[in-house]
Length: 201
Image 1: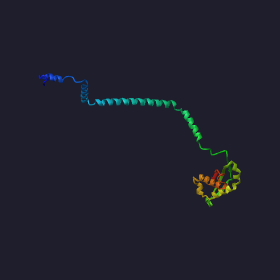
Image 2: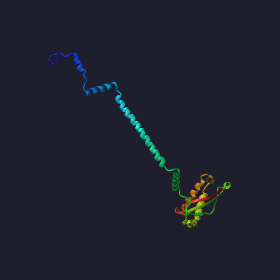
Image 3: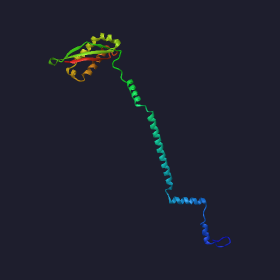
Image 4: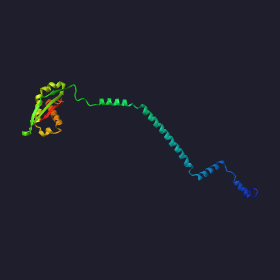
């Protein structure tokens, strides 16, 4: 290489110039590029380390929240006696109404005795019935008792012996007599029929 004066510069001097240290910024960039080339997983390690810390922090927060919730439930939950008392009170309030009430009157009819079947297969049936009615209507039902007995006996005589012996006959008997009581007295006076005695001989 030739300078302005035309003198030849020593080649070794030129090489030394090329080996002089570069600017600070350019050197750091070069070092970072070299490090990245030598260790390609360096950039991935930092996010992974940050993600691990996040998981640990989340686990700690979850444990603290769980402990706080357990403490609230344990100290604020009602005792077993309070729950039992509440159950007893609610059960008593929601129970069915009593079957017998003070405003219900009872009218007992005369014994009803009939014969069913023919000849050697004849059987005797005895039935005692009580008609339920409002207490204010007892006298009216007593006055209509002959009509009630006639309606009941007409139904009983139409029943076969095999029907009397059936297991499901008794509930059906009460239902049929209650219907006939409503026909005679009206739905506002008849509240049902009780069978106080039933005998099949």
